[in-house]
Image (cartoon, rainbow, N blue to C red):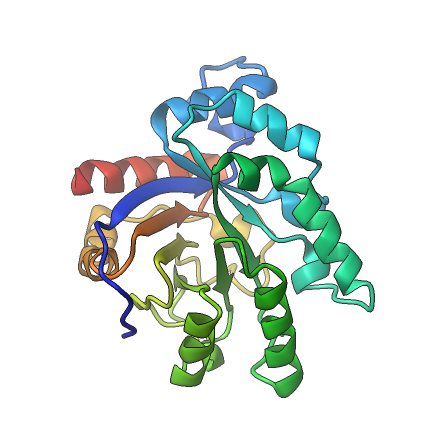
Length: 264
């Protein structure tokens, strides 16, 4: 368990993505135009994790519109483009510059909660991977940022020390209890705390797609088991984000609401 300066522990709960048509009925009234999804989402939740930016480089005009339709207190976490975490090539400096340029409306308006670097399971604890991680953290040194590893081999003190030195949050995850996957934790390595709920769908984790893998509804008892970790995290950070990624058929909305009511 890592220590950082204690803070008031502002907690924001939201979901990974918001533009899902199967959320109509769960969050959006049936027939809602997609261009109104974010506006309605922001009525209920204070933060969203944008994941379209993993597939497509974010454009400043898109994020300008997102800022314009949400309250001034609403925050965005932005998943890093795949060229920074998955399909890394020699044009990394150019990819960094393009991504940073695209998210300027968020960073300049104070609406950026974090840049999320989510690495794949194949990103192993090697000297090459550690050098790449350092390059990214240094390239985004002036922005709030968080790193999610999909392998338990990164859960070690030397990694936490490096993230603390680079002022980068370690992302704590809830995922199926499978060998070599990260273990649940409440690690804090910066003034930002981060938790992501992926669901516990063991059967589809390795062979499912981006919908079936996260098709899981947490029980109230499973969420209750996380409360001590969230409370410990809140005691050591200024801002904590709790994000539900089990988006299939609005399950993320259901669980985010449950946790918000419980912590209220």
